Image 1 (cartoon, rainbow, N blue to C red):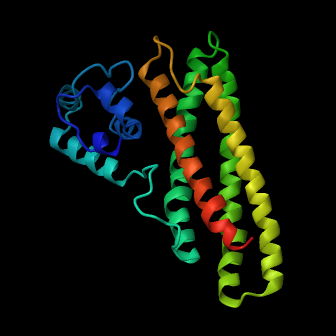
Image 2 (image 1 turned 90 degrees about the horizontal axis):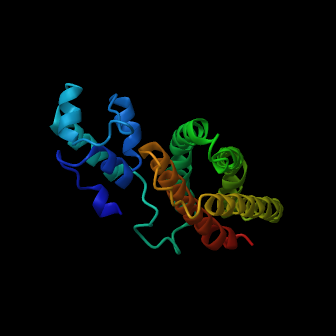
Image 3 (image 1 turned 120 degrees about the horizontal axis):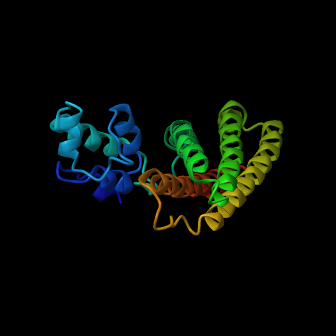
Length: 234
């Protein structure tokens, strides 16, 4: 997926770029390029219509793809010091959630509003995503404000009272991971493994793709914490 995202050209259909790299939908929206109903046209044509430089569009897309977080980790983090691992989690995974959740919300809301009358599962999808968004944002705020500082304090002083409070907080975080995982499981079942129906428009398909990416990023986030970071204190 990472390699495909790096290669764009002026003959690619706008719709295909968005389906291949869902994050590009935000960029096209900011440039007032229609990727939904008007997405079945080459990028060159869309650029000319909007009086935009095709070279600038291609450069921006390449940069956006290069900087967008990937699900796969580029290095083995098993033996990385806790402070550095925490920095990595905050920089990559927490920032991903802060950036992506509001954008995914726009797609989920639009798809439910446009198609929900005839496809009731989309209304439930919107409800579940709302729960997940709230859960994840509250979770990362708690980690950054309360739990991660306790971990760093323990590394510095190794006071038993700090460790006891830390273990209690970690168990709460693990429970929250389970809750988020259950919601993600429900979303996957509801959306037929994120397979959109044949009639689905580009926005519909992109929303499914972004939800699936969110699932992958969340599972990696949970893996880093449950399987690498948390056991160091339990």
